Length: 430
Ligand code: 4AD
Ligand code: MG
Image (tube, rainbow, N blue to C red; front, side):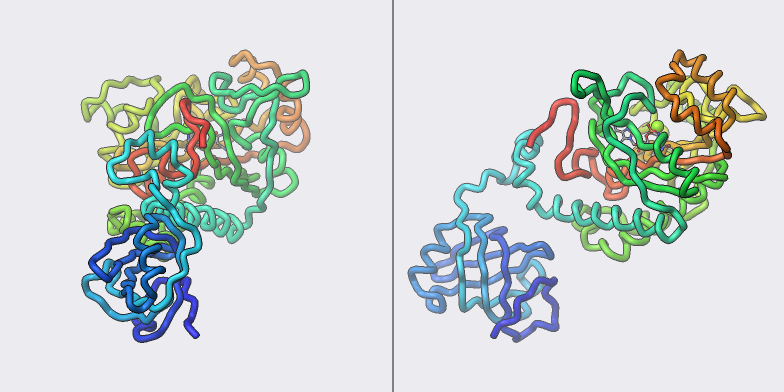
């Protein structure tokens, strides 16, 4: 009997007869030999198939069928320096399960072609590595929050109001009325802290972003938290712990995948808490000193974020933004009400914002005044306003764009590689 292997082959298997199942990654015929590199979820493995061992007929079929055919191979494992992983299977039995001819993805295909064929491209080694990193990231977020007293809960995806301003709302018909796809679960998490105190969610958020940048998706996964009795600084402390925890977990669990993506692991190891903190006004001065064209009061666009964060050697919290460039719910700083008690976390190396968060207004009259200033109708937000009527407490929260984090952490060139099926201004398929 051969042992079925679904782990990465190692020394332990030398001279053992094993069975592996997978897909042809590469194949090369040399006379009466076929070299197959088979891939499965774990890795790739080279196998040598000799005609005399499997018979002429099977050999011909294997020779004909192409890349991405599914096979079950059985044979003895040996060390082989020239094989891509240092091991090779000397095959004595082949089962062809699903043939594949003319697999459309070949080398030097355009980016658009790969996106149209994302359903097949997810099989690539790069995407496999990214998807595993993504798996660890989602797991780590849950672990961190659960170990730190946060309770998981959920807001709805169909909503009736904006959180982050009206310009990026997706409107959907809703039984003769209008609804929107949510931009953030924040307001619902705020309601839930009055029951659970510390809550988090991982859910999709939707932004009708007209911008075509390396960092915008129209649908992304949003890890959000909200905590009663927290101030701005308390929240930032949890966030830097979460970021460092995720990086640690990735280095433990996904070193091989990070290497496949050529990520500098020593750089990731160098990231320590506490992160640097900078007020918005300091950031503007810093940017100006680097020759970046920006002035006090400007919001940071994608280009500015890239230019500024190229000069950072780790993530940086930027706090105290001018009140005009942040949404109405941020708490004005009692010491200088022209700025709000908020923070963005900017990733280094040209990546930019991965978290937005801050302290919320908890006094009824302040919230009503800010809504009036922003031209919002309190009726539309009656339930949000109610929270300030019945036992309000100071509280803070944040939202981490999970793909933004993966994009930076894995050192990807575009955010669309950080999610299996990216949705952008131009793409809703596959
Ligand atoms: O800064 P944002 O808009 O803040 C909020 O939505 C708050 N309500 C979050 C909260 O406090 N609970 O979005 C938060 C994060 C950004 O920092 C970014 O990482 C990500 O969400 N994000 C996007 N990611 C991908 N594509 C987009 N179009 C994104 N827009 C925001
Ligand atoms: Mg933001």
